[in-house]
Length: 305
Image (tube, rainbow, N blue to C red; front, top):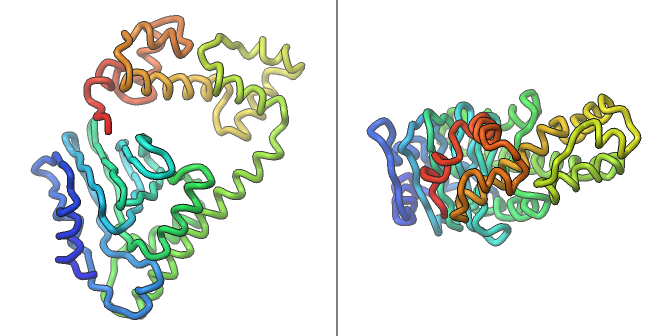
């Protein structure tokens, strides 16, 4: 796919955009190459790659682009809003260390809302990428946060690094893309299989937090209910769910609060109480710690796809 052709397709599919003088969307295609090789008909290949540094205001929305893209956030936080067959009107925070796999054939919007957002974006062909995207989506979505030293990051660096327009290098890069997709799939599958070995009482605690997040909890009460030491409860919960019980609960509450802020007209004080925060000041402080902005600013500045 030639540089001019893909950049033209991108801008033909551009629904809306807002960029500052610091970065132009045309910069996405400085590293686009013509992949006129026979093997490209069946294998995924890199169309273009770019290291990006943007500040607010920056956003764009694309729909109907015959490609996929991979985005790795290296600094700051961006927002992804997407509408696809797997989950309509989904939104994700792309914080540092997050890798997002996006189907550009469906509507999606990228937004830098506050301060600086730095990321690497790689556009790839739809061939075979669609198969892996569907497989990964069926296992729970297409955003990932692999451990910093994971083998996957070595593969990513080879995919997103400097490119040359020769057939041998192009074939190697196709192979690396397949390796990346496969590694993502196996990692996600392993995580899901590991869930079957989580102690039942921890699953019960998590289920309560997920479904009855507006109720009041304490470590002492949970420890007494399940007849375990509260320090053991914290240690084992963190082992399987990456956060302490109360950190996890507050994360669920903040997530629910975001939904209410964007999709209801409830007052801030009411939303805090609806998700389980009895103290409004505590709700606002914790919300800002998690998102970088107050609930009111989040409501005003976050676009709804």
